[in-house]
Image (cartoon, rainbow, N blue to C red; front, side):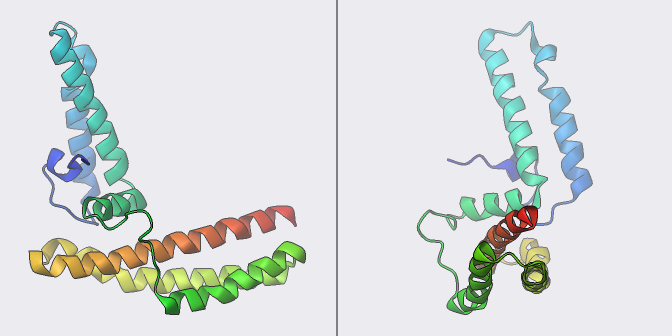
Length: 178
């Protein structure tokens, strides 16, 4: 089972946590669970402290990074299971053209086409980001019965964003070659 990082830091589950509070909690627990302060404890207690220090590090790494935090929350709600990553057909149609242009670049590197695809990917990304921001910001304040719908929207956003990231990575390879 996935540990509850939000609970560990006494924070509500949110896509937009207060960064200063998160960092404060991390440093406070880093001091509290530093193995050097527990050297005289029993071996069992020393292991427990080491486990808590590791949990603290993993929690902070996850919650302080936007993409990791989003994947973490979606996974906790069972929304990132393998094989269930279907994207909306309209989005797939939209990126099919980009993929075709990428295939053309494979055989015929062209800086103008690369720039055009980059511009289209950036525009798609900006539209996605702008559309999801109110959902991310408002999630914490939603009543429990409204959260599943918001999580589905966020899941779709996350999958689209990852898809666009793969296109970006392909573009970077072409840019490096030319």
